[in-house]
Length: 488
Image (tube, rainbow, N blue to C red; front, side, top):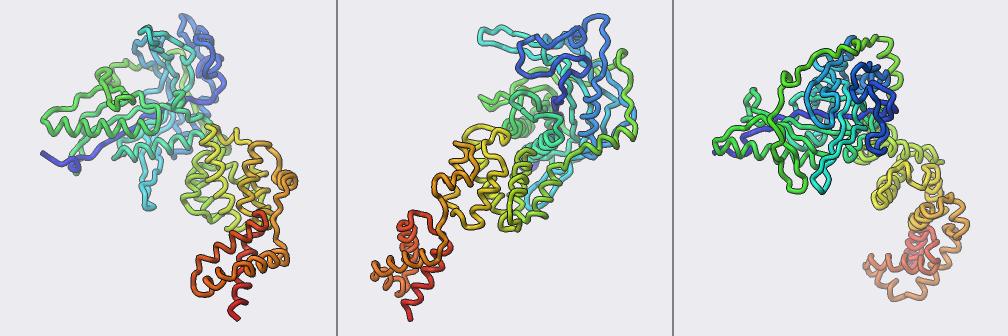
């Protein structure tokens, strides 16, 4: 019996990204999610006899964008093929895809392994295709078919078998999602099925170069389930081999409720689909001019933005990772930065803290996106300005923040209405501190005798006397000076 550590997983991911086009890949039907079942259909996407599909140019543009973003070669000539198979939600009896001549080849995505090290995961190909419909199994064991999704455009991103752990698979998928959402070609929603992932999994003894028999995992609709399903399948294959069995090439469905993968069917090979060039679609020709035009449309990608946040704003890498995860969140953070009156490392970090801690807390509690967050970045920046110039304290700012969420007022309006202006008048603070020290001579003696913790008592009494409006920094300075005078 060999130890589990004697084996290594060999994993490749096939990621399907539904493209954010308004119409389908080969007809003018709407791609809108959630419409009445079987309402967004026409003879073309249903494959009626005699119809002629016409390629949506935006589909090609989006595929080129993804190819450039992942360092792929954009092929000058690619061809659509028919992938033939029968399934109830595929009324044509075939799916229009690309087979041996895809539009993008030989790229990579870089993932982080921890400790600052990075790894390149190769991308074999990115190809365009259309989606199938959807089978809905209801509680009465009937199967209902919704063909609205038939013909919705996809790109499929096929990785090399370079992934060596479930966590690496999670990181790779996370990077793919970041890229497609930054490019604004896919919303990345795994729960709604606009980003879907299949995993090809095999194991082999460490040091071997050959590949073991692979299985394909499907039905994983979250990042967590992708990681869990791959971990389950790796352990299952190792245990099977250790018992003297053999891995069968098959397709497995992940059952998230039971935490197991169940067989669906034997794994198809390419020849099972009887691919042949689609006779109704001409080859896709992409010249350098088109590629260069698309390059000008590309935004700053997530890895570039993260590195710029660290270099420009001097915030910790952890902060930059969190803030650059989603493009709208990164845009929000930079909107806050743009509203700061004073721009330096201290104020950038303050903006980072408020965005990461308070903004993200509200998004999580309310289950909303940053696009629905009630405080504009300019208002949060203005509130931070009030902290920096001493108008309000950090504690007051928490109250202002919550009030901004409720009322959507500007921080200046809230501070004025609630009388939250911080007292920074040194003379007024000195007067209150003097009274407190005079009334608590026993505690003064204790402090002078070495009990440093008594200092917190004096701070608390001063803030209480001034109803929490005293500038804490000035309170500390005055207290230290007054207590020093007692020593003289």
